[in-house]
Image (cartoon, rainbow over all chains, first blue to last red; front, side):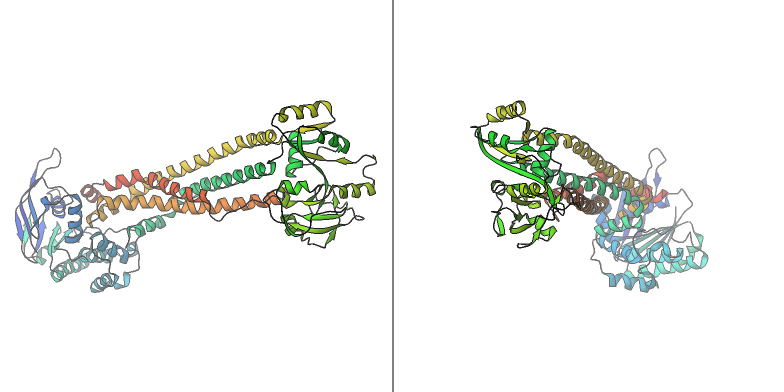
Length: 209
Length: 393
């Protein structure tokens, strides 16, 4: 597993183009991207996730150049190789926790295996919530489920966008620890984008935008 | 985890927005089912019963009433005509066949018709059991009349005066059931047939008619050549005390009277269906606004544009499917109620198929409507800007 970012730039319509620093992550390496608001943190994350089209520069995830993937192929690559965790956990509201996880398997092009989904929920101590609707869970619990969803397809890269900003100190530390541990366990690279200074100590590799 | 399941769950999650669409479609389809089935059977009943009868002769009055009472037995007769006039007309060289009818009594609401054996022969009626009426006082029973009155061969009964159930019984005169007729799908099914002499016998002994000359109520004629259709009725209306009516013309008039009503109902039904499509369209558009983030999320989980398009299209299709099923049920229930009404008023019953070709035809049309209504919202969903939606969601 590896991530390489090379001479990445992005420009929104008439704004000044943002140039991003080059970086490279080797097997299981984890990176904390720090920066104040408006420095292009989320833009970088969206470029990495392939949901913003690349304008300048290259991104290689697991030696695959995102540039080389077109539409459907990019969608499927994203579903299989990238797990996303957002500041606020979002789900398909009409579905239960379990169904949200199975949906991630389905959309990632993997077979839907409820036992496996339950296993992952149990590892995150969320086994009890399988049949609940996502809006019945607390914010911290929701974030755990969204981590479960991010790792269910054993992705190459987990991207987390301000995963702890909405949480109190205790939950923030727990979620951060969980992210690092689970990423390690599934062998994925982890990139956390945040302005949350509380996370600084948990990462050895840091980059400031 | 099928995409179809998500679309069902999405409908179930906010059912209120779909209920109006489902109800509208159900009503539209229900009315169409009711209307088409009813008008088809109505026309079939009227055209099969009138087949082979070129002219009906009866007492002067409304020609439509004469046809309705003599051919379909759903209206009162216009009066009586003297037998001698009928006999005279029958000898006209242009007349091929003539069938006399004398009616005016009923048993438990089922009309008794005194006639000759030519009448059942005209409708190609066959006996189920027993014999045809040969002597005065013998009666054969149509299939539906037999079923609903419970009369069997060997039973004896007496008729009541008038065309609906009444307490004015002809108690002194008893008919004997000698045969039952197989179901023909024609008016014969709801009649009790006797020899025409029986009708005279009943009323002569009671002194209903104090004139010595026997009378009949109406008569059917068929002609040797179509030319006679023009000349004979005119002659009858001009030179006799009787009235001649052409069933073909009267039935057409009836159809065109009903037709305009049916037509406006049909337009109404189609309008309701179209509005249901618009309702599907608007409610999906509204719900997509609330679900923008979810859709973007599904894209980040690997959903292709096509998959989002499909999921939303399916939501429209599910709503259409529910509307269709409910509509068919509503339509059949409506037919059932209408059939009950026709049964109690006219002894006519509607055939209600569990599933016929119209229902089959409405199925793809409904699904198409749902898909069409959902297409624009689905297209918009598939075009959603993931990055923007996630950043501002």
